[in-house]
Image (cartoon, rainbow, N blue to C red; front, side, top):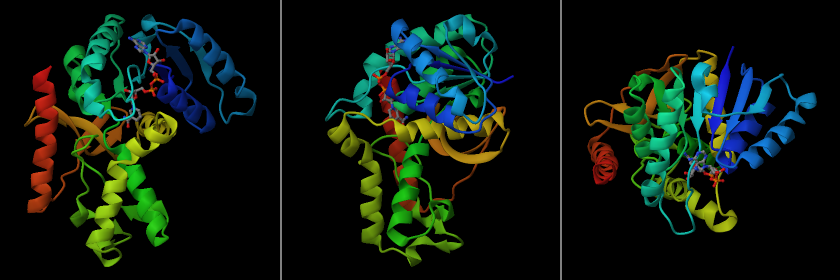
Length: 300
Ligand code: NAD
């Protein structure tokens, strides 16, 4: 019996719910929770009207925090999103207060499953979920740089006309302005990416990935389909016990932060982290990212 409780049913939350309904998943029950009670009643009606044409039957209902008691995964997409010109870190004050309240209420229900966090600033919110919940760190997963990695693969695939499924490249670090691509580890099939693209081309792709959210927000006010799909990807990796490698925000015990790194995801949450062999320049970039997250946490 796989039960998901979704807390925060705005653009991101509902993109996740809709993507979940459209894919063949092993989710049996989906419960929507939001401050805006009327909206979730409407959302539940709308989603239920998809079921006749959906690949699976899912019980969908509006609920509250008591529903978290026996949930397999609690997904949090609640909170403020970036306005034009705002960085993800600018949301820290508002969203940290919201998270204290939400995580405490979830834990009061007796929840002992896996938290999956999408709210920004992502690595800080994932860390706060860990601290407020007191659950083991393997049960706390942030979407991390999974969306950035999906954007990277799409852009490289378009440029060299190879399926994104054969682009083995990752964005790691903070889900934010200090994220980076360890190009020394990036391959197309079995061949290093530098055999396909020049340093200038790689730098342009990196900047386009890093700035993608700003570009989308300038045009349509928010980004949500991509992250909805990433949340489904991680949900499936958990529920199907996949042992899949995804760049999620995971616990770095040496620095006491959460940060985007390739991790093995299965029904226990994060099973292992994959060691990344970085060159000297990339090591400095990772340190910068660790510093950016740590500084944000210390300011709280
Ligand atoms: P939104 O404003 O559309 O939705 C937010 C929802 O949260 C609203 O429905 C609101 O009622 C609800 N909410 C607020 N406080 C709450 C509380 N205390 N309890 C329950 N519900 C509460 O925003 P959105 O576009 O869906 O964005 C949500 C978050 O996701 C933002 O922080 C945004 O920056 C982030 N985001 C993350 C990624 C990523 O890659 N991780 C990508 C896009 C957006």
